[in-house]
Image (cartoon, rainbow, N blue to C red):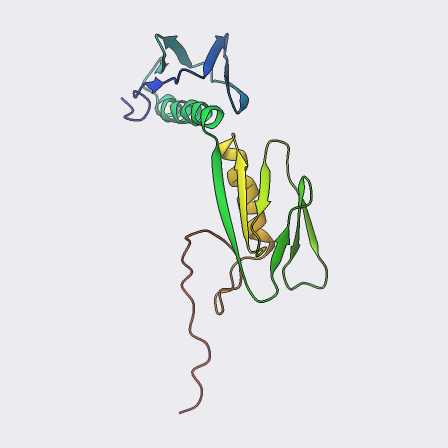
Length: 180
């Protein structure tokens, strides 16, 4: 049996879960998320505990069992606490601004780059304009937005300039050795 899939999910008091047919709706103080689970799995709610069960031991069913449990757990955490992702901008003259629901970057290109945030993701930029904080209740969506922002200017392998996740360490390559 899947070690992840068989773990029950504790539902906090401020979160409501509604299961109808194959649709699971989770609502809480941060908002509402819904997911349609595969028909081979069974999702049940009993006394504040959400459980996922599978019908057979096929390889695909075993894989879906752990995946479904993780997705539901992420939904419960998202609507109750939310998710946050921090990005750092490294480089002379590199900066970001957050006017409204978009981000405007100056990343050493000949033009400014405008990134429109999807619905449900909010961004704030610190005072020095070199740190972006993304917040959302959807873990998958915030991860995708963070990866898209990082792709605007990947960290350089020689100087380390670019957009990186906070706490990410970049192993820099050695430049030219020169003549001996």
